[in-house]
Amino acid sequence: MLLLDIGEVAERSGVPASALRYYEEIGLIRSEARRGLRRQYDPDVLLRLSLIGLGKTAGFSLDEIAAMFGADGQPNIPREQLRARADELQRQMIGLRTLRDALRHVADCRAPTHLECPSFRALLKTASRRPLAYAPSRPEVEKNLLPKRRKRGDR
Amino acid sequence: MLLLDIGEVAERSGVPASALRYYEEIGLIRSEARRGLRRQYDPDVLLRLSLIGLGKTAGFSLDEIAAMFGADGQPNIPREQLRARADELQRQMIGLRTLRDALRHVADCRAPTHLECPSFRALLKTASRRPLAYAPSRPEVEKNLLPKRRKRGDR
DNA sequence: CTACGAATTCAAGTCGACTTGAGGTCAAGC
DNA sequence: GCTTGACCTCAAGTCGACTTGAATTCGTAG
Image (cartoon, rainbow over all chains, first blue to last red; front, side):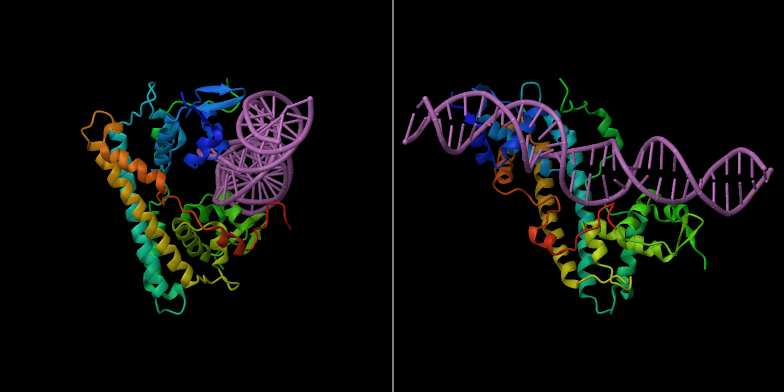
């Protein structure tokens, strides 16, 4: 029955207390009890926070992450979704690599101004034909499959 | 003297007219003339817009991109900055690769729940030790070196 | 008992890059 | 001359993930 203060959780997880309250507000984590007004957290929340952090790193939104926890609180990540995200990451990587190589080349190019560098011009063409997949952008479809998030005032 | 209407520019560049007006407002592009109220653009703006698009793809903010155009309007990108950004991209790629491999492994793992998968647990540990470099995040320092941007009402 | 510090609530603010909407103007075609 | 539609301005709204601030309430140490 050793429960943690919010400050304790914040320190040990690296997640600011304000963010913890926010996560609770949107139903991403929960506090087990109160001592007076103060939230008391089950130490399990630390694992859950790692999980959340990992999800964020992988480019999932908080909504999507929330959807990955089953009713039992156990993480329940559809394997298909993981694969899809891995493929997305793959695509992003390719874009990044292209870009990195181009930047390096241009940085080392002897042409007096960048506009005179042939590979720079080539890069510009490529970039305007199809934008490199860099930012995590997802098709419209997925969003509509997600449950709506309760807004801040909702009850 | 063939100048382009904003609609023409929008169509040919893929950048919405509202965004073009916004770019002009923040001084990122300019229109050469007006015909009545209507902005008339020099076709050169199309190249400039490619350049801007490329910059965005590379993770530069509009402020940074604006700073890359010299007073003459010629792009003037410090080679050092390009190299630094290329290195940053490199770091992001490594993070993405790690993550991609982990996701793939977990997706294919035979363990009944993800929490029981040893590599998943290992991944969690890694993720909480040092967050993977994924999102373009820049050191504080750089920001302060940039000129302030005129706000929307400023004159 | 009192002071202190750590938490609390709730509303509002922040950031970047735009988009949206209301209401107005203008050039060209009929 | 009138309509249409593309454009204009300006203010305000949007999105996600939080942060900040003001006013308040606790638990604990002295």
